[in-house]
Image (cartoon, rainbow, N blue to C red; front, side):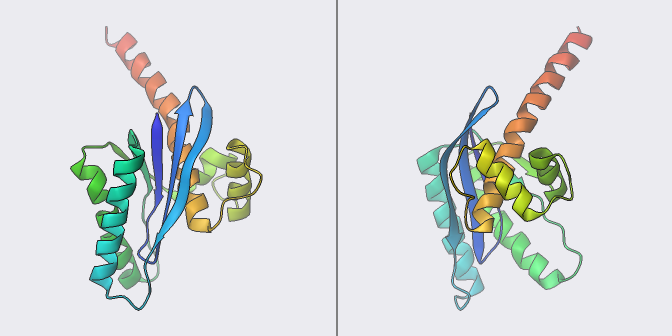
Length: 170
């Protein structure tokens, strides 16, 4: 299964593709979509949409995993990021790809076993799980890979639960 992880934003969108097969992760592509801060906001959204569309068409993920947003301080920034998140996911929606949301707490718990792990701990575990020589840079790209890995790990649990539910409901 090919999974695309997304760390949404409007200045930088992190993305990462992994192949997941029976508990093994293989990195496919990792990077960022960046937009200049001096560009008109709606033009930034257009860049994000078009770049995301190209990535999805080229790398053909089976499922999309994305960080769920929550904001507790700056609502204006939160609204802008939410708009960018919608535009980021629109190509996947248009291609009928399944999309799954994960909170930062879920990602940290999944990757490190501790929901309040430091960013460096998560990055190091991602590096280790993907058998990379160095941690992924920038942080947004590393976060996207962590989200993709989290989804892969949750797929096992979800499928086991579905089998269990079917066996009970026979």
